[in-house]
Image 1 (cartoon, rainbow, N blue to C red):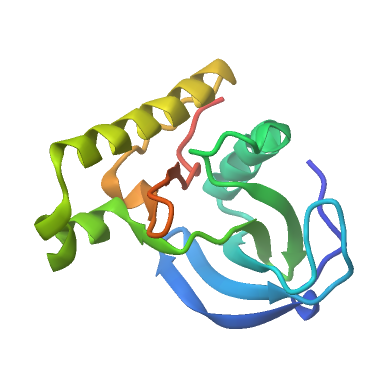
Image 2 (image 1 turned 60 degrees about the horizontal axis):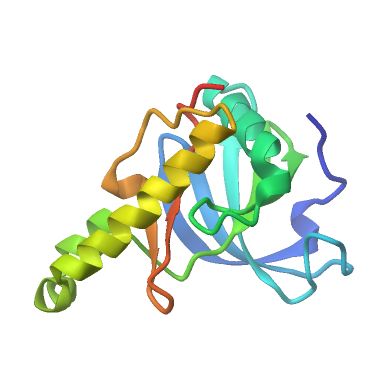
Length: 166
């Protein structure tokens, strides 16, 4: 497992996106130099996790294993990780949208969601799970809160690999 030379000073933190027992996720803009992974001015999600937590190590190992296969559109993209004090910071794709639980329990989707929409969502979830299985990964925490729905594209992405098994 390798860590990048990045630091928080390479980003502008815009706002907190989520917080929980896993850590905190922030929306950030990258200020550093152009690289194969990160683009200056690009928006990313920074997931701050306690380095000593076993779920951090598990999630990092899973993301490192599938990093080269970041082209699977139904799995959250991972770019790199860096250390900051007692925290491991994962640099992840920023998804403009909500998790499926929030999306499905908001008023608007109840007015527009159809059986066809549900089938499209389920096909994408299954596609992501098949990809994980082909790479020897069992997610073990699939729930609505761990599936993100991109508002503009309708693409769903599986996230949060802290309970996964390799």
